[in-house]
Image 1: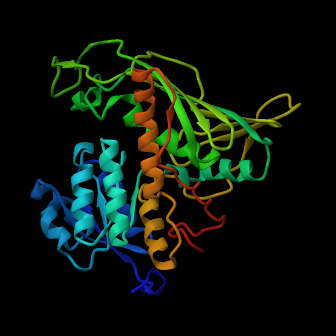
Image 2 (image 1 turned 45 degrees about the vertical axis):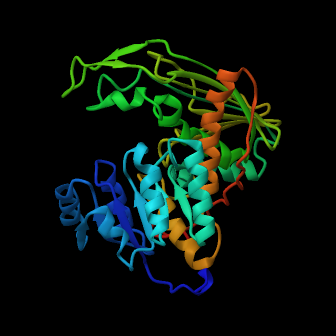
Length: 375
C-alpha cells in the first residue's frame, strides 16, 4: 500500500515514556488532533503507564516490547530519556513503525545517521521535536521573511543563557554529562527555528568552556549532591547558512542574568525580533529601515498555545498525502550534526562543514482549524 492510498483515518499512536512531558502529548494526540489517536502507552514503570492510560482514556498500558507488536500502531512517539532515544526509535523501525522522538534525535551523531538509514531502507519515517517552529509565533516570522518584510536576510543572533538546573530540577545531573549541556538541552529549539527561518546550515565553528567544574544540587530530593561537570557549559557558535546569512548562537549554563533577545534576524531592509523558540506563541516585532521604533505584528497563524505533538500530527498527515512532514528526520539530524559541529570545531580549532543536509521545512498554511495541520 502506497502512502497516497492509505485510508484517511486517525493514525494509531503508541507513546513510549510516560513521564512529566507526556501529558501534553496525550492531551493533544488523543483528545485534540483529528488525525491521531493514542492506542497504547508504555513505560519501564508499568504502573506509570497505567496511570497515564487511565488519566487520558487510553485503552492499553503495556511494556515497550508489547507496544511494538501492536499492528494498529503506525507511529511510535518516543518520550524516553535522551540516552534511550536511539534504541527505542530503532526498535520501532525494526517493528515496521514510523518513529517520532523528543529532542535530540539521539545523543551520538552516528546513531542519528543509523536511524535515518534504517528508516529509508524500510520505507518508514523518522521525525522529532522540537515542533515549536510550527507555532503561531515562528510561523508568523516565516511568513514575514518569505514576503520580504526585512529584505534579504544578512545575519541572525540567538541567545539562550542561564545558570543551569541544579537549583530547581529534581534530578539535574544529566545536564552536566555527555549529551547534556546547554547546547544539547536547548540548542534544538534555537537551531530548528533558525533553519526554518533561514534554511539549512553550510558550516559552523565555535568556542566552548567549562566555567564551574563542579556543581552542587540545591533542589530536592538530591540537595547537597556534588555534580562533576563533563560537558561544556558555555558555547559560542558562528553559523554560515546556505543562503549566505551569518548567525551567532550562544548557549550557556554559566550566566546569572542577561538582557539579550532570544532570536533576532537582520535583513537588508529591516530587523525582526523572533519570540522564544521554546514556546509556540509569543510576540513578533519588526523594525523596518527608517522606522523610529519597533512595531508589534499580530500573529498570522494559530497553534500559539502548548501545541506539543503538532509535529506528530503533521507526520500522520504526511503519511496520508505523501508529502514530507515538517519536523522531519532530515531536519532533526541536521540540527543534531550542527550541535556536535560546534563542539568538534572548538576542539579541533577549525570550521566544521555539514555533511547531513535537509530541506527548509514548508510553511504551514494560514487559517487552519485548531485540530488539524491540513485544511
